[in-house]
Length: 187
Image (cartoon, rainbow, N blue to C red; front, side, top):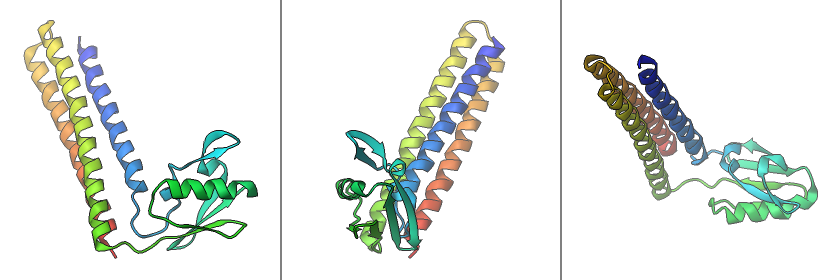
């Protein structure tokens, strides 16, 4: 019975950790006015008929703080990569020079910065919901165990442990969002 209750807590922690990892990956994609290869991280391009991640058909690097450079491994990939960047609607304009694609990162307007902060906060809220769902599932598991004979006082201790873990993850999310907001709003 004790192992079963601990399993619920472990599953909740694992789920919460996965949610925070996902949030971190999503926050990296939100641009802050500085060039970063991660800005094109989720981009998929058609490669001989099959959708392929950009980093598998080209090298993406920064040449300076405001410029991304995409160097395809095959020259015939220039046009599909350029088209994929346009269609991704990232607010970026690729420039094809026949050898590589250069992308100048425009400075963010105050209005755009506020929209990006709002997007980051929205991602944070979605992550908190997912963490609360993991907490609810763990709490339900503990309550079921108590119904099936697990000591009630031990069940209450486990519930408070689950709540403490949930609060800790909530604080981690807040710190991630605050850091991203500061990063976005820094000119």
